[in-house]
Structure formats: C-alpha cells, structure tokens
Image (cartoon, rainbow over all chains, first blue to last red; front, side, top):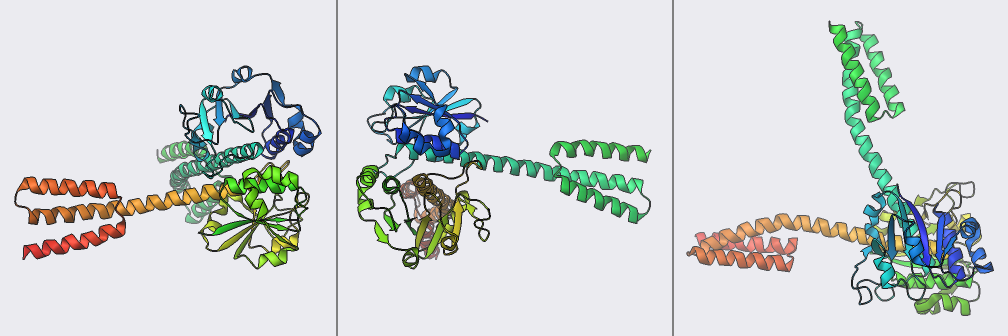
Length: 235
Length: 235
C-alpha cells in the first residue's frame, strides 16, 4: 500500500495550514510538506488542534523542484476542469482515483495557492491531475476543504478495496472449504465403523472450521492431508 | 429526489459558518439554517466568498424544536462512535448513506456545536445518525470539514446512483432495440422487392436509432407498429 504526504504550494493563510494539519490527523495521515509558506504563528496552531504535532513536524522547502524528487508519484489537484489555463491536461474526477491507490511507493498530494491554484509547469511536473467534482458555477473550494475531501476519499476507497479483497478471499475459501469437508468426510468414513462416531467427528470438524475462519492455503494443506490419509487406509 | 438543507446547532465561530456557506455553494446546496448562532460579522462574510448569498439568506431560529417540524427526515452527525454518550444510537458510517438518498422530501443535515456536538435529546429527535469514519485517535473534525465531506459524499452517491440507473436503462434498451431491429427488418422485407432498397432502409433506420438513444418505451411502441404493419402486408 502506498503512503501519502500532503504538499501545500505557497499557502498564504496560516489558518488554512493549521486546518490541514488537523484534518490529516483526523484521517491518520502524517507527513505535511510546505513549499514557501507564510510564516506560521498562533492562528495556525489554534486551528491545528490535536494535529499540532503534524504542524510542528511539517517540512519546509523553498521550491517545488526540491520536493518532487522525494516522491514516486505526484497527484496534482485543480478545481478548473478543461479550460484554457491547462489545455495539456484533463483532470480525472476524484471518484476515479482507485487505480492510483493500487500503486506502491510514496505518493504526494499537491495543492496549489489559495488564490491561483497550481501553475501549469507544476501540474506538468506531476503524474496525475485530479479535481473534486463540484458546481460549475463556483467550483473553487477552500484549500483545507479540498484536502479534507481528498483524504476522506482516499480513506473511503481504501476501505472499499479492503472490503472487495476480503470478499474475493472469502469466495475462494468457500470453494476450498467445500472440498475440504468432502475429503474430510470420506476420510472419516474410512476410519470409523460406527455411524455415530463418524457423525460426531464430521460435526466437530465443521464447527472447528467455522470458528477458525480457515484460509484458502490452510484448506489446501488439509485437503492434501486427508486425501492421502484416505488412500493409505484403503490399502 | 430529496432536497437537502444544512442545519448548524449553536455554532460559535463565525469563520466556520462562512466556510459552510462557501462549501454549500461549491456543491450546489442552498438552504442554510442556524439555530441560536453567534453574531455574524466580517469574518463570516470573508470566509463565505461566493457563498455570500447563502450566508445572507440563512434562516435563524432560537431552538431546534421549531426547525424539526419543517423537515421530512433529519440526519444527525456525530464523530463519536458507540460510547457512553449516545448509548441509544449507533451511527451508520457515511459510506452507507445510500438508502437515505432514495427517499423523497425535505432532508435536514444536522451538525452540532464545535466543542460538544449534539446533545442526546437532539440526536434522538433525528431519524438517522451518521458518522464520518476517521482515526480512532482523533475523530473530531472541524465543523466546516464535516459539512464539506457530507456534501461531497451526497454528491458522489447521487452521481453513482445516476450512473447505475443509466446502466440499467441501457441494458433494458439493448434487448428491446434488438427486437425492434428484427421487427423492422422483417417489415422492410415485406415492403421492398428490390434488395438494394431494403438494405438502405435498414441501414438508415439503424443509424437513426443509434443517434437518437431510443428509450425502452419508444422501442416498445415501434415494435408494435412494425409487427402490425408486417401482418397487414401479409394479408
């Protein structure tokens, strides 16, 4: 799974920077990078609340070039969808970020200036451009709102991906579990002569398997075992 | 489709209220209701930016009871997941809001105080309790961040629902389109003697249908027409 850092380019309002630190803490992110920021004072600290450690540990750089080389993948953000300003790049909507979350490495989320956003050359230095789908009438979100929504969406998609992976895992396991139980039963039948004993053994094993959330690999191992056992008993 | 209003209970920082107005404008929402708010001044207006009309038109009430009766469905928000404070209600994660978006009517999104959230009796007066899944270590978001994420998520789920409906519609249409083209061809064959003419008519009709994104209902109507026509010609 990749790690994410938040990179703010020339933020001018310290309240925003504090708010960003807070929401990073809210969603469990920790590395904040500030490129040529305004001086941080009381207001930034007040807005950071329990994200104060993130604010204090924020790394400061004079320019974006020095930051770029520290990352494997950079995601630029814009509220401008397909205008003259960025004719070279069409942003993908935040809803479709999924694939970017599947890469490995260190990902930087790059946010532009409060009044202007990112310059073209900054966007071009990034690997991907995303925008938060918003009202055409007024798509420009407050800086810390943009960060909040991006971090929320990354958390959400991670959660969905985890859920999907778990489901897939479970499906695979179900098939193997069925085979395992068949092999086990056949093995039991070759072992016990009294039906009562066989029944109890089967029931017990089922309960055990059920409680243990047996994995595919484990099933596979036991299938081999019981199959082999059964063959030996036949001889 | 339901309409959504944002209801802030006793907000104490005017900057937050302005920020909420701005993000409402960003996502195309318009009704803001303030229950016993702090006095609004310059800071609220500055933070509202182009959401200033929403701030100016905000409706003020002395207490929550007067607000409740204006809504068909109230959604309360909390950052506290299953503690002693709200033993009666377990919040659903924001990810699972879907069903609430399928109801009709006037929905109110209720946000509590910056320092305390909602009181138990306020939560109990609502129909549903949601929380934004966040870090266990520090789940309390800034008020305007909570609003921003809720409005973003509602927009996103609306978008997903629309996409799903469109897909369903298209699938149904594909089947009917196929039948329609069969009926049309058979009709054409019964009309034209020269193969060339039949070919052209079929081609033309296909292009027309393709461009027009014909609906299921429209297909159904034309199927009836051509079938009947074909029968008449046979006689």
